[in-house]
Length: 88
Image (cartoon, rainbow, N blue to C red; front, side, top):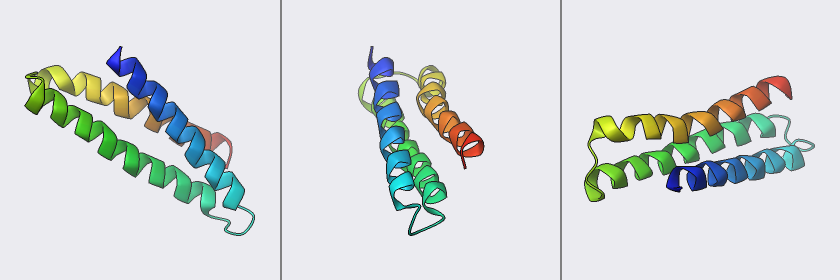
């Protein structure tokens, strides 16, 4: 359930970043690229914090948490890259 919530939050954050990129693209041509990069950096931080909580606080091993981290970070980040590639 927690993984699904993180994926939902990642999707909503991606949508917000892409919307901001579109809104500012009229004045700043590189806004959509900057929004995509900003999303990936912020999402890497959030995903890493979740990894740290799982290992340090919840007692999981890094080997247990790594696949979850890759899913939580990778799916929204890959979606962001594909959307940026398809809709420049």
